[in-house]
Length: 115
Image 1: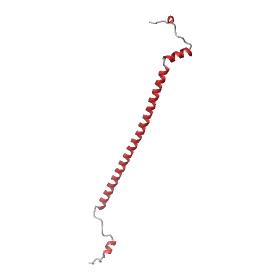
Image 2: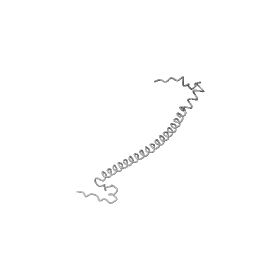
Image 3: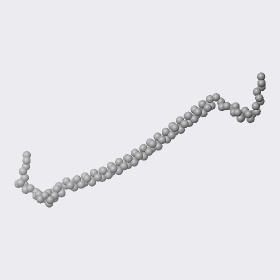
Image 4: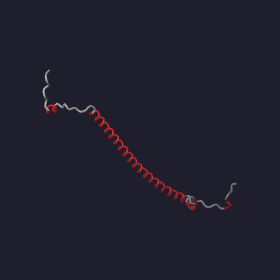
């Protein structure tokens, strides 16, 4: 029986006889998977937060725009009510009837009362 040749420490290190422990690669892979999952979860959360914030800002602009339109419509309504009251004033109707249409007030004996 032949004896194996003696090897020096340099030969042992050069051949990489030292191997990682059993299961270390699996643990490292699981750690990497967990880290990637955490990063994806963090990214999704950050994206959701930004999206909600942008939606909030756009809703604020929409509310301001609608409020401005409402104020303009209320102003227009008040102007139209004033114009309506001016147009249906009895003095104005009498003036238009006399000047433009040539109408005159009826005499009391010309009136017919319908019952």
